[in-house]
Length: 502
Image (cartoon, rainbow, N blue to C red; front, top):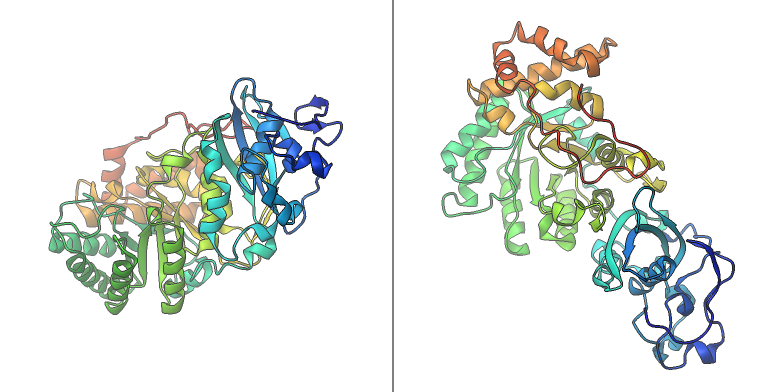
């Protein structure tokens, strides 16, 4: 990076300086021209973060010849107040308060050329209760900065004082279970398949069959909105007819996530209001609608006693790659603050990206009252949630009844297990697919409660239950040990992730 001026210090190791490098002489500091970011005050190696600071951990890959400490200082500068040259208007502000401060830079274990950079942001840099403003700062221009080959926001510590400016989930995990009167087991769901092309009547039939067979929820997929083959009003009417009939037939509270995603906020509210008028207990939104929309709909759900399901559609465009983008653990934290009740968080055993330990870290972020640092699970900071309501994580994508033991072992009870193809692809039909999943679930929960080792004994437990349940036997025979056991792209930097070959 270009530089002008003095103040360079001797480095003894990456991230540890023998003296500060900031130019403190005002005449030199504010002379016209270009300075290093560390000279402008964005590298403060002796800084001790305040309880009210937001702390971010960035993974940075500097270009050849770019000093890692200077790169870390540049991240702090470009995500707060800096630009490429000295500007005299800095002297009109309380610069020390508004500058982000990079205070530590260390090599990433086993990843040559990559470095972790810790950056602290004063609470006054962000608007209260606005994820949009926070993200505009933290992942704005800095990710396009030429001196960096790549950058990734790995984790974030949001201070209690800032957490308290957010409403959080409108319903929350505990109240949802109370409304459903379902305890001691995961909830079961299924995504209607095929995603696109069904008529309203046939779509409603799928909903009824799945719920009648023993599922708690059915679900729209991320890309079903209001296409020519099925207007959204028709879908909502047929879906809720199926929900009502299945609830009456089973005596259980049932629901279906009605996707209200639309091209405008006005249309989203129209669809949400219609869903409420039909007696729906839950609506759904896609991540791609953006933070202000998600927060607004969360507030609407809070006022209207509705559960808000969040499909993380589009997240993989910036969460999947290890060296560039934003970790999903950060997205999960922002979503809990923004206010959703359900959140797709990965399966570890299905068709979508996510290794077991990393995915467990996402679940912790959703369900903890206080999240502890856990490096093997990618959690770099303690996070106090200030009694913010808990989010129900959702496991969905390429899972089936034969994996029930793995899913419960990995994620416990507070999770929604959604088997789309693993319900609707059942050889004996949709209702039989739902029966197979419900029986597999009940058998596995019973075995676990009896103290059995479901992780290792799971296949035997399922086979025994299948002797008394033909739909389960058909499911196990159909999908056997089908899995998508490819190497994950986003794994822990501090512990080798175990495989799921059990």
